[in-house]
Amino acid sequence: MPRLHTFIFDLDGTLVDSAPAILASFHSAFDAAGRHPVRAISADIIGPPLTETLQLLSGSADAAVIDALSAHFKAAYDGEGLTRTTAYDGVDAMLRALHAAGHPLHIATNKRLHPTEKILAMLGWDALFTTVYALDMVTPRLPDKATMIARQLAEQAIDPTTTAYIGDRREDGEAARANRLAFFAATWGYGAIDAASLPPDWRHLPTPDPQRLRAAQ
Image (cartoon, rainbow, N blue to C red; front, side, top):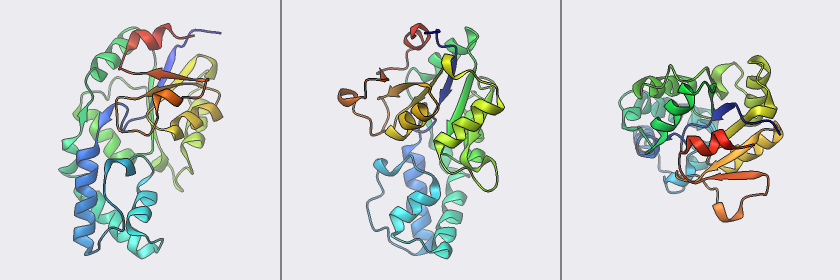
């Protein structure tokens, strides 16, 4: 099997701890809308696209309700909210080591493109990534992460046999599998992957270790 050369990363819960910023912005959105969430606003809700999360929290699929909550969330998060985002320990060194060694790096995230780009610039990472793909990068938005990664592979002429996706949720692993990519489960974040019960074709990445990624075959 060829050695891995290209690495595609999830963002929230994998490279950055965005929980404080996201959760505070959800609270602000519901307060501004004068509504009460039907379930706790806690880290386990982070990961799915914004609309899906707001439907879960509000208990409503009404477009007017979701649009209002979404507008309030974006106002809170895209302003000062996202400045509370921090990189996980070791991630900056991992990314810079991979980039310096000539490995193409990419982002594929459920987060909206605008805040994603602001966070990458804030952390000084914007020059490290060849491409950044998000569900809302096109209209209508892409339906799911597997479709987004398939588009990224095709448009960027990325060889799936030498590429891995790194994420913190089972959805990430399934998206990698759908595109025949190697998958590394990053378990240092707040994702829902249990290292003890990984499928046999998924690899465990317990710390942001560039050597483990580069040595994988």
